[in-house]
Image 1 (cartoon, rainbow, N blue to C red):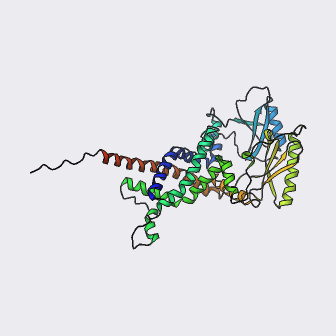
Image 2 (tube, helix red, strand yellow):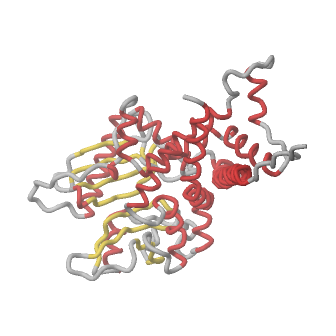
Length: 401
């Protein structure tokens, strides 16, 4: 394919993505310090961890339902230090809730606050969830996922197009070797014109950080187009889609679903059995989710197979009526595709390598913004130059002597 076609593709792909990548880059920079910003904005909601024996998931679910009698608990997440997040939903026939999550103290179960994750923020508790919503689905569930999914897919492909365009043009006649001709693409001439400095910054920054930009582009496909990501990964690796990306399962069992206490006991027993069978150790429980629409419970722990600095993704799914194990999901060492995906996700979430990497991720988000802005500027300057050339009056013929 001619190089001019790749230039055209890179230009218009960049223009189409620029606005979205600016939003994603800025919000991503903030989310790299999600915990610190949450504690700063809402210290009452995310207090520091305190001494004491923490309550179990079933007890916390019951406590939440006693605080809000017209609602029932759906999820219990214990991964936040000093705060437990309980997903709540209105009971049948009750009025809709004006919040989505109830935060409780993990030691004595008293209420810390309430949070809404969808819609515009109405209180400071909702600010960081709104930033997260902007980053993940443009704060528009459904259509926002599809838009950012298309952007992520185009971004992934454009990473390769942009890399190709940094290479020396084919057919150039020069005594210099390949790497000598490629070297200018890695450099920024700050003392040149403003346009040239922008062009060098756009090209060199994209080249130096190319591998991480590709990691973020492809991992974004996982979050926004999970079915596409699953099919693509399964072409080359052993991979099973996460539960949130799977279709609902029919419920043919007439028995009543387990209550929270029985589900917790089943989850603990099944996870311990799987730990012995697959040779991993359980470090701490993290979550118990009642997936009513799928007829399942999910029990999640942090285990020796987790690689992230915080939380964990070792989980099992079991039938909410019979208690039969359905699926074990180990973040590493079980399925090759899942191991790769775990690394992509933890890198994307800045959940590896401690504070230095989180600072880098914050910086990378600003670089993505810079690449988008400089790309638009380069297009605008070239377009202005072309228009000026077209509008330039033709020279008058010299008068005859």
